[in-house]
Amino acid sequence: MQPLSMVPADVVPNVSIRQPRSGPSWIRIFLGGSVLWVATVVVTFVTGNTNLIPTIILVGSFLVPVTFVAFAFRHGDAVITAQRVFAAFVYGGVLGVLGASVLESAFLAHASGWTYPAIGMIEEGVKLAALWLVARRLPFYTARDGMVLGAAVGFGFAALESAGYAFNALFTSHGLSLLDLVETEALRAVLAPVGHGLWTALLGGVLFATAARNRSGRPQPRAALLGWYIVVVLLHALWDASQVIAVWLTLLLTGTRDQWTSIVQLGELPGVTQAQVHVFTMLNWGLLAMDGLIGLALLLLRWIPLQRGRATAPVLPPMNV
Image 1 (tube, rainbow, N blue to C red):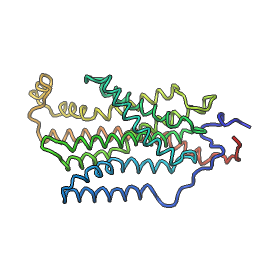
Image 2 (image 1 turned 45 degrees about the horizontal axis):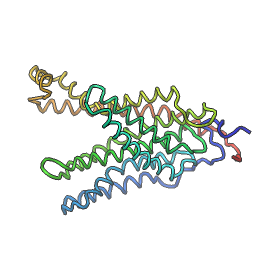
Image 3 (image 1 turned 180 degrees about the horizontal axis):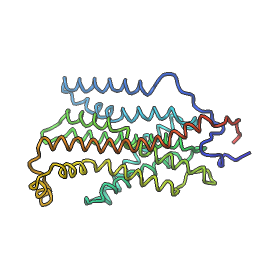
Image 4 (image 1 turned 90 degrees about the horizontal axis):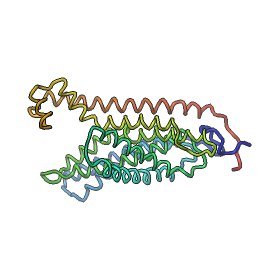
């Protein structure tokens, strides 16, 4: 009988496929969490009780990532247990944030034109390493499971990062600003589904797919992984640089000679008009939307064939491993 390590990565031996659970649990998580978050925000505004601020930050930062991890969990094989997903979300997220912080402080002390690609390389690299660590003892690997665990790691990173941004937004030159905190959390919640979770899911699927081509049956770096890593880094860099690109595009379309002279010589943009603000906003959101749609299209192009293969795969008898 064929040894377990040589079974193709998208055929699942000796493990039953998880049947869909009754009821859309991820929808209940999102709706219930949204009600709790809104209620906490309203009570905080009405009472002025700052003790509720940590609740606003934690619930707001984790709600959307946890919702999408719960959604992804329903599409993994039975080997992807709730414990594994929880470990990927927490340990992968924390290791990713810590690794990115250390490396960025060491290598990106001075801003340059390569800052955004460098940030993308560092953050995607540490998330990929964290995924490999939390998944190194799986009994077998499939591309589909790699995307599920990759999403868990990426959304864990996104949740912790959002909490940090929300905490920083709270403190302004005029004191604590609950409005800035709420706006930051709401904006990042809208953008979360097409950010870190999506990018790491892409890399996770490619990483786990390499197990099918490896004698040991374990994921290893391959040329395909390097190629997808470059793609994800470019998506990440475009996402981070969208505001800067939008500023230059706005100047290109509507800038005056005085504005060009000032920004080149002084690094400042004087006399900004309301029309330019509207153009900048549309360009910024347009770039983010384009980036997110490209990433989502790539994810679907990889995910749909895997789901079709899963539906048509023969049912194998139990194997003694």
